[in-house]
Amino acid sequence: MAVSPGKVRAPKRKVSVSLSDEAIKGLERIGVQYGLKLSNMLERAARYYLEEYEDIEIAYQRSKSGEETLRAEEARKYLELDD
Image (cartoon, rainbow, N blue to C red; front, side):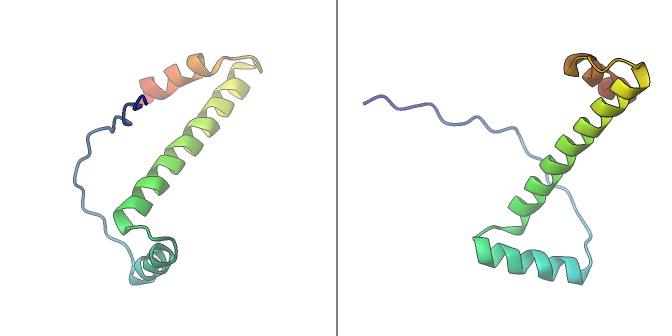
């Protein structure tokens, strides 16, 4: 039986984040309910935010260029230039 290779994970950095007590308590409740750690939930939230931001930026660049057919790869170039 063949074993599939494991998923390669990107390196992680430690960061410090300040959240309100209300936000932390809410996240802890969700974490207990679904068996998730706070760090895992924040990682998921950050990834979701980045995906949404990219989608919005691509749509904006398409509308700005006047081309509905602007390819996603071309629009991503705008994201890279803004950094």
